[in-house]
Length: 235
Image 1 (cartoon, one colour):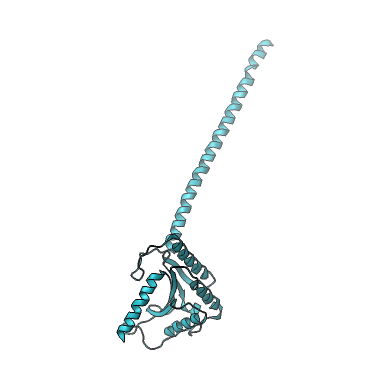
Image 2 (image 1 turned 60 degrees about the vertical axis):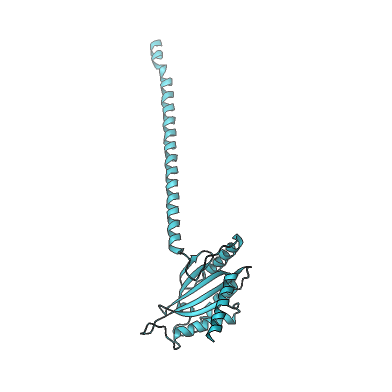
């Protein structure tokens, strides 16, 4: 009987070893699980960054300054004000209007909005849709914001098919009537002086391009002086 007891005594110690090994195995398994989670988290972060870079490159076209936009050095406050103007214009066109594209061409200087002509005007006419009159009011309000040292203005350009000689039509067309109607509607709503220009451009008559500029006030005065001198020289 004593010999039997002696043979059975090591068994509790062996069971303890098995229990310790089991806990160690579970610990290693949990550690491996958390390592896999961390690895997956890092991968998703990289994927998210790639998606954001793709969206930015698709919806924000950052181009070099064109000839009509001279480079200038502005204070940080001026740039923030110009950026706020562009954000406000973007918010104006966030309403349910058929907008083909809204893009920042030059941050703090120029942005462009492309839309369908018939989404702004009644089809086949120069009459602005009644539902979009509040849109014009919001544009006027944005252009009327006063910022020391800065001037806000916009261009309304509607596509027009050139004549056989390559020149834009001189006689009144639906496109020129629409440009005039837009100018009159904006003026009637209190657009600040020298803040809007309308015209035709070679292109699809079904497309309207709105360009919004932020210019230093000194640059605007220089352009006005040049225009005045050209008018005097032409008399």
